[in-house]
Length: 123
View 1 (tube, one colour):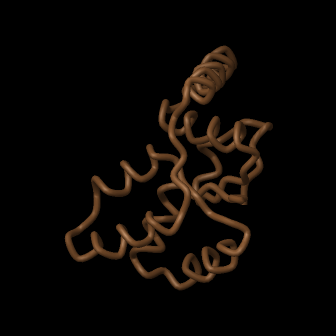
View 2 (cartoon, rainbow, N blue to C red):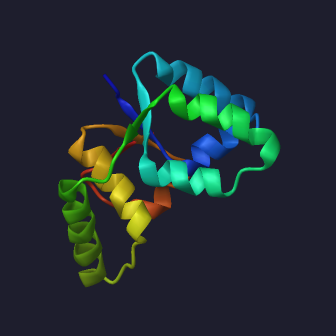
């Protein structure tokens, strides 16, 4: 069972060889790690060719969550809620949050300011 959803910034740091991030992911891996298909797309579009092979293995080792209608609807709800409070949220970020909330996952990110939702568990 997957317990953690990795954000793109964490995966990028892992692929760059950041020792702190590598340790963190190894620590969390026993409980299960995954990412949104949107996260994998974000990361893959910016890869350098020398990182592609490592990235392929990394993504194969985790669960990839699809954006299903329930996730899309929740993402839109978050956007509307926060727009009414004067804060603009990005569609991909809200879909990642909706993926975590829908699947009862803890989001692992270095960009906590992008995710103001109280429903979201983060580290």
